[in-house]
Image (cartoon, rainbow, N blue to C red; front, top):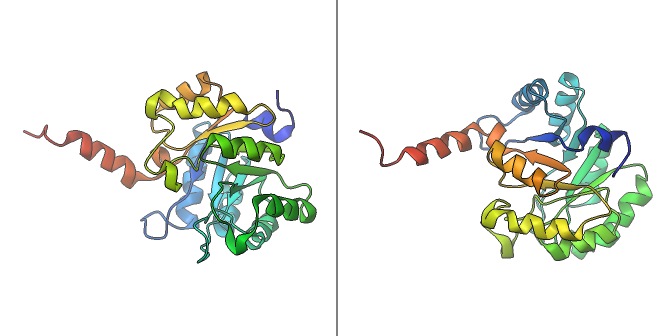
Length: 235
């Protein structure tokens, strides 16, 4: 349905998000590039990488398409994922195949509207592909009208009115609701997909692409899930 060399590669496949926070043991481009290489060897079709150092290091090891993001904090806004043109410019210099950004309805830095932000990006980088991360059906509808190249559900669970939720709750009903309103760009299922069964389920429900992060690349989260499942069963 959606053509173009990048989406021809990504459609129906698994993108692995290789990111680690500063306080986590695997933070740093050496670890994240190794994660990306392992993902590539296992059959992933793309990588999400955070920051210019990780993108640069990953490019040296893998040839998979890279979606670049950059976290940055601004005091007047809770949006941290590629929030301003400053981060877009830094990422564009590394030439990822696409850039992901927060497209929720939360207040943006400097009170900038999402529409104005997108217009600025398009005017400066007309060939840059953009992925919007949203949390709600209403945001998805609005983002589609702004002509993003694809839409991700990654922000579901990260905003005030969706905190603590994930796509797999209620048998993926939230994902299904977003799927019903998206027809003009690829839909990326992302957020809380913790097992191969979850990934298969969102594909059955119409996901064009699946992103998995923590369940593959954050061993402390994976270990914790095993430990919690074993509580009360020790002899």
